[in-house]
Length: 68
Image (cartoon, rainbow, N blue to C red; front, top):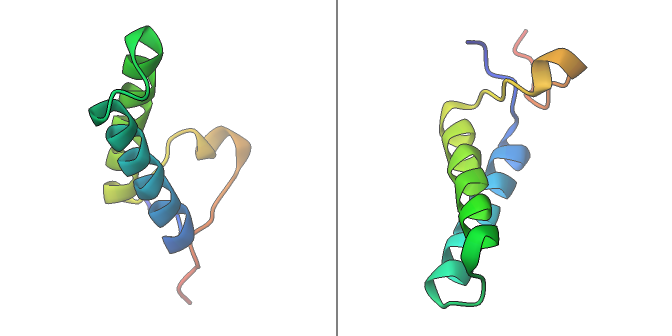
């Protein structure tokens, strides 16, 4: 897997995952909606750690700076 996510994209996803976790922890969100958001946050966190987002491939997105 070749990295296709830049630093800004990765940091943004981590921040979103943390915010959703905090909203859930403080019971601001709940029910099925909360679990859907938590699942999405887990995916965001995983893709941020790996630097690879498989959804970017079909659309040809690449936010990672290319090393020459």
